[in-house]
Amino acid sequence: MTKPNLSVQPTQLLDIESYITRYDKLSLITLQRLLFLARHSPSKEVSKEGFRILERRLKSMGHTKLYSEVFGTAQDSGVAVASRGTEGGSGSDSAMDLDNSFGVSSSSGITTTPAGDESSPKVSSANTSTASTFYNTPSEFGFQYDSHFVHTTEQNASYQLQTLEANLSTAQQNLSSKGSIREAFIALANFYRGQGMSSEAIIRLRHAQEYSSDRHQSDVTLSLAILCLEDQSYSMVQNFREINDKNRNDWVYDSKLKCARALGYLGQGKFHDAAVSLLGVKHVDFTQQLNSVLSAEDIALYGGLLGMIMLDREDIEKMVQIEAWRERLELVPFLRDAIRCYMRAEYGECLRLVDNLKGWIMLDLFLSPHVDTLWKMMRDKCIVQYFQPYMSLSLTTMKDEFGFDSVDELEDAVALLIESNRIIGARIDGVNRTLTGMSAPGLVQKKRNMLMKKIAFTGDKLIDEVEGMILRMSCLENNIIVQDKSSSYKSGRRGYTGGRFDANISSDEEDHDVHML
Image 1 (tube, rainbow, N blue to C red):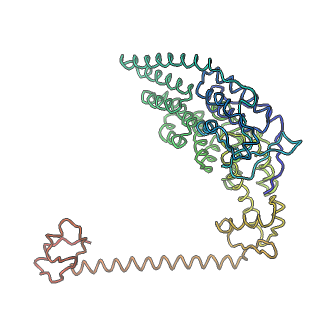
Image 2 (cartoon, rainbow, N blue to C red):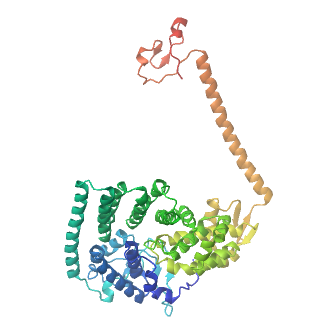
Image 3 (cartoon, one colour):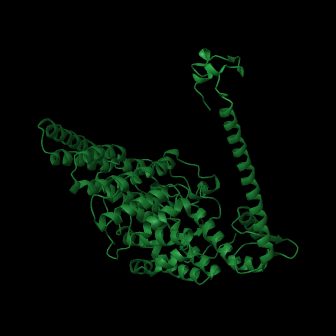
């Protein structure tokens, strides 16, 4: 399908320094965002700047693991970008594996732009599982691996780890207060987190949670939620709310946890749950409260986009009436206007505005793996609602409205909607190129036929149950016992022979029998 040209402004792509300052500079997710932008940006200037900022931050944090995996493979992964596109993303396996291990998809689905329009990335219609044409590496920009930094930092980290473990051992042996033990575990968790070892950090924070009072539970819980997101343990994030958020009536804590849970749902592909969680963040002051994971712009983009795709029109109207969400949507003008067009049933313009966002969404760490799925869901929803008021509609008109390449492509999309019962009672007229719905009497008759089938099925089921009940009552009245062969006491049962029952049982014996069904 031919998509409208994307209108991502050059300043949006080139001002990477301003973009990344929205997030906590010590967060691993911030580093993941930087790495994703640097590797998959169609702009060489943005890619080079992204690697420069990433190198500087990794050295300042002493994050030797990620530094070695990004810049240590630079000498082995200097494969031309065009070669990656034509050969299905071939190149350094270690570089590709790094994307997966740090939650960064190596398949951004971005293709090259026409000459003269290099500032506006275009979205490939292929599935996101296809390798990206853009896969930049540090070696392309002359970055060198600093082995001296790695060796020195790892030595210092080894000494620091010994000190932290000694502090923990001392606190436990001296039977110190819970607070001292908790702080020792948290210090160890922060150390492992700084080394990129999220799994080890989660284990230490779990121990810290055991020594936390109610006053500290929320802080430890939020730290655990963020660590689970960094480690891509999305299912674990869902457990924290039920266990911990009842301990404190704190809107900041509640909003942070909702955002973390929303990212967990998004990572699992549960778009509706993610939308509901984000729309629950209703406080206007919640801006920089969770910048280690999300910025205010991200909350607006994720919540608004998922809400528009997954929620009913009434729920979307309630969303835009919330003051906090009206202010947030001003941060993403294309999305704000798209929601307005959707509410006015201007579906073609709505899709064009959403498409204007795709160039940037393809470079977003959390949304990029789902961009094709979300786009299809949004388009299908618009097609269904576009047809609802009509009895007959020209497929040629719909093709122009929704930007399909041909009527045949539109027919395939509509046929899938009819087969999945998203469009009920409609037929495609391949000769006249129209989509025709049933008349009102026809729909009534179809519903009546479906109801009669349901009644017939329910009646047959009722007859079977009644006959079974009558049979059981007859067995009771005639003192007949139905017993499985494998019953433990069948060998002592008188009158039982080889799986058949002897009906000639005396009345005296019957008084002592245990009747079973």
